[in-house]
Length: 115
Image (cartoon, rainbow, N blue to C red):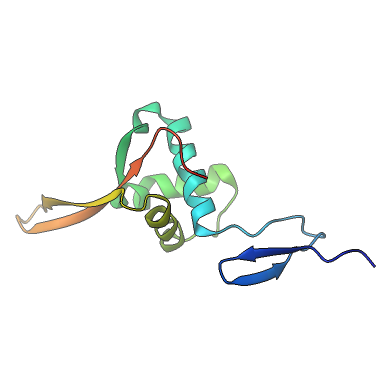
């Protein structure tokens, strides 16, 4: 019998399945990969901010297609971005087309993401 391989995910311990040969990705793993992909896709994103509406409408669908993760949900990615960019996101005020005051969340895209 082969030794049992385990992986800790938060407070849970999960068994690594050799047959699948896949690790378990956390929301933070997706967020780091997404931010690296952003900079690789367009260097203008480096040391800037990206807003949630742009992530949702354009960037996430492209990221999912190019990185082979079609089931990644917006909420999972945003939760990871919030944790990876701890203290590095901001609610930015703006006026919508009807003149109502709104806010949108922007996340910082740093030069190099923390591991």
